[in-house]
Image (tube, rainbow, N blue to C red; front, side, top):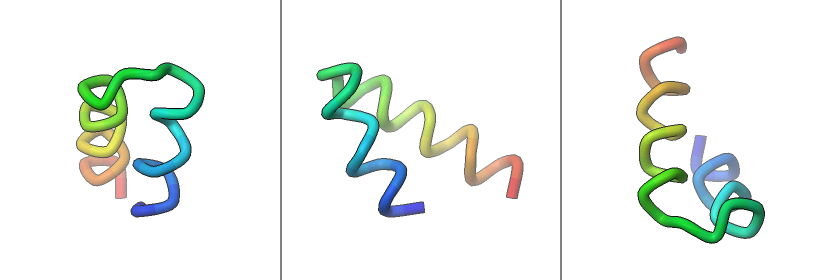
Length: 29
């Protein structure tokens, strides 16, 4: 999950979006 949280900010450029995606992924898992 750390890899996803680290990679997403480079695409979106927003730490908030990365955090939300991390939470969504953690819920799915």
